[in-house]
Image (cartoon, rainbow over all chains, first blue to last red; front, side):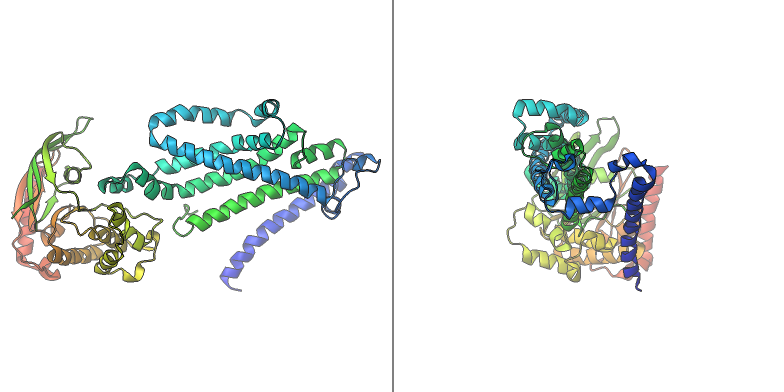
Length: 279
Length: 242
């Protein structure tokens, strides 16, 4: 076996072992740790997969309590699609506003000083404090859920972009000045390319946060077309724990996919020239 | 010989009160290669930055035409996201030279990097990076060239080789040159004139004309005349530090 293949195998084998431990602990929780009358709170993995993903649609019309909330893959996917739309639109808006704000702040110290405290405040106030207010002021529809995402995803983009734009090498700056480059020229030719690795770091963090924002907003609004957050709450209320665990898994998968996508995109864009600090 | 670069009673005191330059008078004629040597921290780099317009003198004045100015920094200052070819093309872009691909290609050939045009800076050795930096300025076909200890970080062999190449280039183009270094051998080998600066506040305390004709061969460094002149420059430096 070549070293290359061995390295690749090692990369796969580690996560597989941890996944095995996770599933094992889950079974352990169900069969050993929980007392018999509480075991239904932690349904075993195979039941979750069977009920939430391998069943297309649970008939919500039957009178049994456990299925009154509906469920099955079709409901899960529909909710997931809605949450994904909310997260991606919120993230897109946060990217546009965030990069614009950071650019503005990079141009003058006083602009940075004027705006930064409020961004920190926006970041520091728990999103849960905003959510009910946004619902009351702006309704519980799609646009309010998007707004929650924007608020939660904005700060890392601004902070990282600003950091990237401002931490340009002094000698690079002087080279540009020496040859008469305007501010716009400096931004376009020097600062933005130099800031790309930092911008992608911010994007990756914000992407994860946007997914959380989409779910949290939806979870607390409890109104309108259900996203994955509402499903989680509804399945919990109707004791449909298999479905609930399914929703949690899908929410996690959405977050992972988005996080992974921006990591991949970042490597595509700056990978040719950028070397992260070696370990 | 027309003057390309002129310092007139230049003084520079920084806002914190340190005086970096004190009453410096220096002319560089076109076709002249003037090298400034001095102990570290003597203000020789500041002198160069004044010439380039990166610092403003607090006394006196510096006159130079900066429309096509070549400037090579201490490090190569390449943009890591640009390939060698794109880095060499940077100044052409900034000066709006339009389609400069012929000039860029020629500059890359001069420094011998034709096979490396698509590499990124992280893939280059120190010497190759410096060559790229040199080529970047060559694209402007400068009349005035300034160097701020450009080869200080390179190993001895690479440094000598780049010195040889720079002499060849100077013979071909005859740009007016102001070169900063702390290597006496490098100064004597390259220049038409070597200028010695005192420790801070920097003043010019000696001029040495270098009589060796161009093109200068690599083994000039081992001749008695060369070492005699180097010793004279070295003595001036030592005397200044006492």
